[in-house]
Length: 325
Ligand code: SD4
Image (tube, rainbow, N blue to C red; front, side):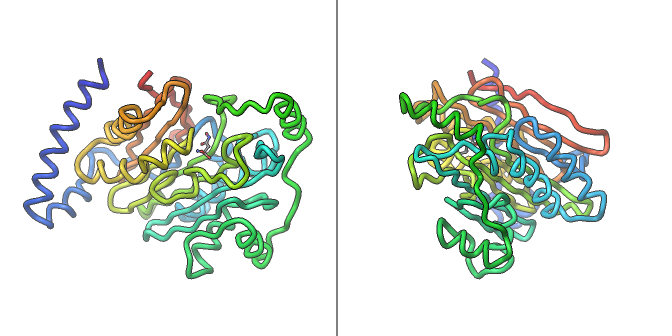
């Protein structure tokens, strides 16, 4: 079993690293800053098949934008796309027919901003950035988030498209709530970038699980769950069943494991293992992607079918992810 062999290797490494961590605080910095052999940045990485988002992010980088500018520009692409039914405009509604959005951003200084349960605003990622930059808070929710967005000049509009409405009406006939694995292979976008200054930025945006209960908030806007960036170490983001990610804080875990010496892939695999060891995972999907400070990318998921998109100077590639099942 490959994952067992990897786990043994990783656990050995992590014991070694925790010994180091215990013996000297200076080692923490050197661990964190230990460069891997190859540098692979500027880079943009996103969950699922999000080539258009990566290309928008890449253009932003090439025009001199920061990693944060890049991930915001990237995330806005599926948010505005009515065909992407897991993000922004055209997203699947909750069981009462309301499209409610969660999003966050995090920058290389460790700043973070988020919105949850936001209705009627096409670009929650940009509102999240405004929360980060223009308020003394990190998270605004519901009516307060909407009021803030409007005060900041965002336009309120109906986000329920006729297609999403028709599917919801069909769903209502039986009203059976069952999250679907890998819906149409494009889903919540988690996007991370390293710019030419080697600064890391990340964003995550979603309409959450289709037909969720009114008021439900998932992992995507929660720091350490749907996204975490630490400029000394790397970044991670999650997609899939948010409840599983929230119970294990996978993105924070991945970054901390990398800090202690795990490779990007080992860290992602361990985050999945934390879920499968404790939770009922058989019918659910969670996928993680991560980058280290040098731009090395790793990923792992519970179920097969998860992919991610990576863009570097050599172009854009879609990568299939190894899974536990
Ligand atoms: C959530 N994690 O709201 C999001 C949904 C998602 O792929 O990522 N779907 O739980």
